[in-house]
Length: 110
Image (cartoon, rainbow, N blue to C red; front, side, top):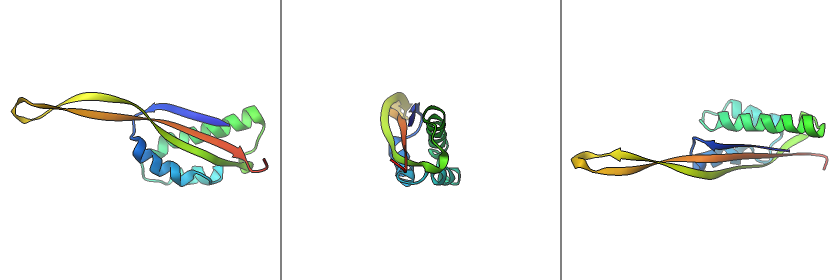
């Protein structure tokens, strides 16, 4: 039971701080943590967790009470490169990072 969201406009380094919080927790507890966490990554990661729960319930006939977050990963995606104009006619390169979020759930019985 897994779900993913690719090309999310957030830094993978900051997203890993949130994925480390929910790894190993029950699915209900993970949703509660993500709903009350004041980080920008919590919203898209919460959507991925809910999608993984829906996949488990619809495709494998599992219940929410038996699910836990086996693995939550934030991998690095491609980087968007933009020009950042500086003084004296110079310019720098500004990198906008993208992340691939993935959540894997498992049941406690197995």
